Length: 467
Image (cartoon, one colour):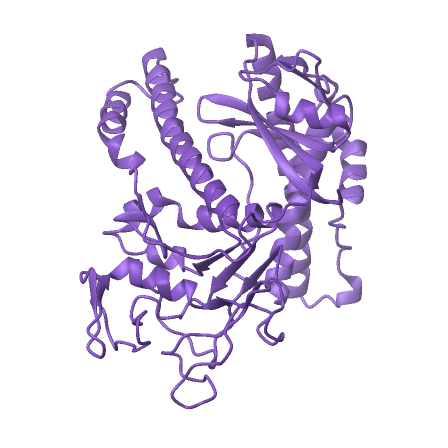
C-alpha cells in the first residue's frame, strides 16, 4: 500500500544516573556558551558599524559584517574555542553546533520580520541566554544515536547509554521494520525530569476515513472544552483549577524558605531546592494531564470523522481578558487546532478552518438569520425570525459544519455563496466552503488542510471573544 513520508517526534522520559545528569547539564551549558559567544560577536560588529555610520563613514568603508550562516559561525567558533572554552573537549561538538544553530534561526527570523518576509507578530533581536531563564536543552544530529535492543535504553553521543523511564517499543518497531529514520534527538529538562525527543522521518501507510461523508463542526469553549455539531458535549476537565490548592501551598512553602540572592551571593537552602522541585513536579503533572486529554480527544475526532471544521481563534487576543485568561490558557485552544491539523493529514481526512470573523455564534443554524449582537453572558441562542432556541455553543458548531456539504462523492464547497447582496460580500453571512471552493461540486478533498476565506474585504476588527 502506498504511504506518505511525514516528520514525527517520539518523546521519552529519561532516568539518568547522577553522573549522566551532570553530563546533560554540561552539554546544555556548552550549547548556551556557544550561543552567547556567537551572539556577542555579531552584536559587537553591528554596534561597531552603527557607531561608524554616526561618524559619517561611508558604507563601503564600514567594518565587514560577520556572516550569519551556520558554517561560517561554526568555523569561527572552532578557531576561537581553545581560548574561549578551554574545556570544550569534555562535551560533544553537537552541543556547540546546536547553540549556534539556534542563534542562526533566531537571526533569520528577526531579519525576515524586519524586511516583511515573515508574517505574524514582530520578532525581536535575539538576547543572551541565561541558565535561570531559558530552557535547558541540547540537540544531536550526528554521531551514535540508537535505541538499544531491550527498548529501555538509548545511546547518545558522548552521553553514552541512558535508561528510559518508559519503553521505546513504538519507535523501535518502526526502526526495525525500516519505516522510520532518526533525524535528530533533543534532550531537554522539562520541570523536574529530563526527556529525549526523537525527530524521525516516518513512512506512514495511507489511510482513508471509515465514513467519508462524516462532517462535524467543533466549537471550543470554557464551559465545555468542545461542543460537536452532532450534539456531543466534551466536558472541560479544568486541570489547573483542580491543582490550584496544591500549587498555592507549594509556592507558599517555597517562599518561606531561604532562596538565592544574586545581589548578596546567597545560595539557596536545601529545603528551598526541594520545594522548588516539588512545585515543578506539580506544574508538570498539570501539563501532562492536559496534553493527554487533548491527544485522546483529537485522535478520536480524527479517526471517526472525514471532515472537521474549526474556527481560527485569536487566542493571543482572548487571553488579554484578565478575567478569562487563566481559564482559556488551561483549555489549550491552539493546541487542539495544531493536533487536529497533522492527525487529520495522517488519517486521510480534511481540516477546514473557518475565517476568524465568521459569526458562528450569532448566526441561526436553522434559518441563517444573523444577530447584530450576542453578549458572552447569553448562553442560549434565540432566533427572532424562526423561533429556534438552542444552546449557544451547539448553534455555533452546527454553523461550522454547515460551511461544507456532502455531495455524495466526497466533501465539497458550499454550492452557492450566501449573502443579501447576491455576491457574498456581506460579512454577516456564512462563508463558502474550504480553500478549493471554486472546484466543481463532487470534488473530493482528502488529506488537506484549508482555510475558509472571507467573502468581503480585509477590514480589521477587534479580537473575537470566547464562546
